[in-house]
Amino acid sequence: QEVAIRTNQLLQHYKAHTGAVTHLSFHPSGNFLLTTSLDATLKVWDLREGALFYTLHGHEGATLAGNFAPAGDYFASAGADEQVMVWKTNFDRFLEDYVAPAV
Image (tube, rainbow, N blue to C red; front, side):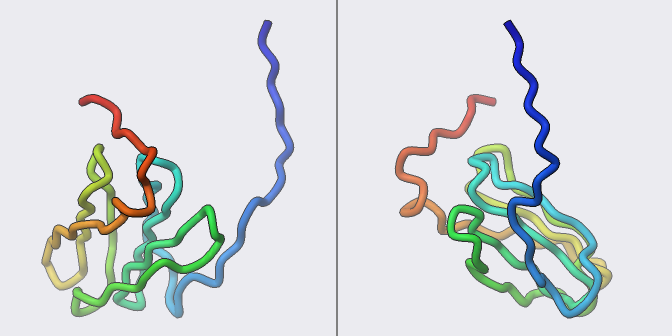
């Protein structure tokens, strides 16, 4: 028996950046969201708390894309400055019961 539930309900809303949001990526655990923006920042949001976790400054100019690695322990960002950056997450202490899927 299948049950489909559609609520079309907004769960969270963030005034995320001072420039247009260019990309977003959910952490594999579903607990964090990475956003990139024309304002040259990357932001990681804690979806459980509904709050900003941290803001990163690394690119000179717009950040165009960002994505978490399948295990969630790293993420990469790409910028208009022609740079790709790889970042280490520090989520371990917040995700004690999260186990990354086998790849």
